[in-house]
Image (tube, rainbow, N blue to C red; front, side):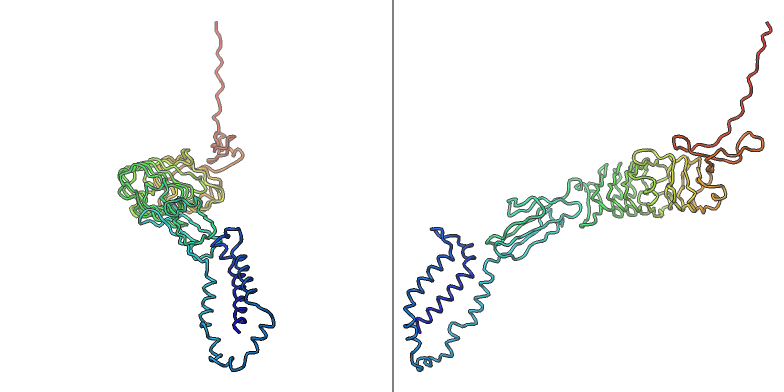
Length: 432
């Protein structure tokens, strides 16, 4: 019976070598003579088997032991010898051999959350691990570190799981072009809330910013120039309230809404818009609570650095919104499409330089347009109606009946004007 048990034990060891040999080989490595752990174990088990296995006859002889021997010692308890339940737990422990933990954390300026980190958890030895770091708007990724050693400069860090626990830090910092600003951010939005130095003379809002908060620059009396990047879509109410030195403003083409009194108290002289007339007409200007115009009552508007003296509304436009050109003193004329059926409140409020309106429809259609309040400058300008061909003369033949215009060779509006007839030159008689 003793030999039978040894034979069974040898079989168990052989099975263990087959299942766990690769893990032991990976952890311990090859033996001194180059053999793997599993090979060495197989040789040992084979040798033990030969030594313990005398012959088939000896095994049969042992199996013929009297029945009293099989009953002695309470053979039913022999199955519990060594606590078979514990042996099952031992099997679970073997399944977890080679499992280690990966900790992934963000590390940056104190009090700031600038990265979203993923990929941490438990991994088996040799398993592929991928850590990812995604910076929030306004921040930049600086690298994956293990302690003070740079492990990977790319936001996506992939490596095979070593035979130990790993702790990685994704370092981040504030973008250089954002360091002069105070802001809050997420993966999709970044809102400026103020200046790091309220006495600064310039404010440059980079393209990663999507909005400017209420009262963000309120009271920054030293601010003279503000450049708002292409990413900003909204400037909240009173954002630049009381910036008494602000004379020049640059707006990105994606601005879609400007809150009430956003620039109240700012003596703006120049507003430079990066877009064109089509996108400008889509901006929503909230009514200033203080009255007046969104940018003040005396500024010049530039599109792409070119002074806008003539507002050529796009064909198909039905209504310019409220305050579209309010306070724009540089405006001298406007080309109005026949599609326009209404004009928003105060769209031309304070446009004291507006002299001519070139309307693409007829006088009857012009009279049907609904004008919002505060558009005296538009209604008071001289209106010309479009005629591609030369219009009919008046009864005297000295001019045209009504006021008409057409496009010149250069594409600019030209008023139809009848040239006064030239009187024949007097002929001088030589009396001498």
